[in-house]
Length: 333
Length: 115
Image (cartoon, rainbow over all chains, first blue to last red; front, side):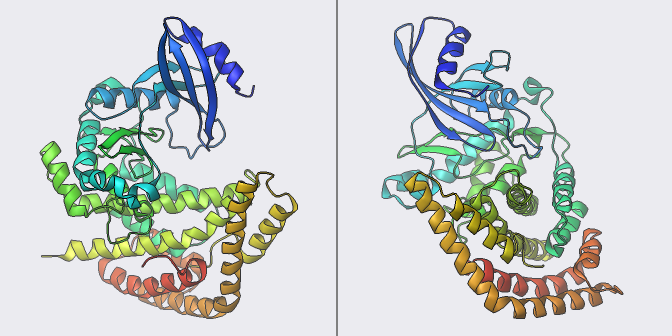
């Protein structure tokens, strides 16, 4: 059954303790993996501004644990001190809206071009590395025991899964194979898996002129190597054209590594973090292929999806640059 | 590193399909208009630059196969050998061959990409 504002209005009040009156309910986005609604209501007479995130049920890269885990990870990271939206209730799917969760709306801007260019956000950019590192520290210190059952995805698991997806497309692209061979041979072990956000990048942060207000989009969360989040934050695709500023187009890797060390007491091994940057670039390349093939195989008849296929060339270049940097770092005295 | 899919003919078909059924929302249609202009420029560059690119690609594949001591020099054989891992000395040589080729491919797919 298609989700409508009326359907939400019928189902949601029964999930909440107290008298709920919904005044407005509108769809914000119908993304590939989540259907997001803004719900304005009163709860026992008090005004509420909520975000309802539902499973779109359409596409899955095979890496998402599902909306219940997404909500639980967000809650647990929030309890550990990460700025997140408070989860109001989790929907199991039995209610008639599919899996999902309701959370409080947070203030802030998430659009990268605005955050990178608008003078209003200059103070937020100046403090970004420190705040991002503090958020990461909170995520990574979240006790894994409270998320028992959340899948572990170490480097080798991800590399094999992504390469299998790449091979399924049937294109012989030697750069992907070169990088796969290197990532496989150099995969770090993950002795103590921690909570990993999995998509920690500009675009998934709510930022005001006071800085980071919330970390969004926990749909790729898992247990794994904390360095994955640092590497993904530096993937060139998330620098939005500012190649010379690896951390989200805002700052240097060294600034992030030092801020992370200050927040956690853990010294970042640049080789280890840069391994994950390469793996992240490889992942982005496979995701671009995935989107292109969703068009080519007739699943999503979108011209935009078709165009994304020709962005794979960007990821091939970026993978080669990352790999060259890694080999040079490896030979540095 | 062949040119990626969608191929030129697949992109032409994708543009034609959109034009047959454009989005009714003018703002969305404007957005797709930008994508079409981007793709048409890409197709024009591909028509001009791809013969030279493909020639250089064949040479890079052959030289890479020589470095690894492979008998056959085609993209699939090379990809299979690469996936088994490459020793550090050979890797340096291979990277120095493939990086310029990747730049050449970007000259077709996105010449404004910051290098």
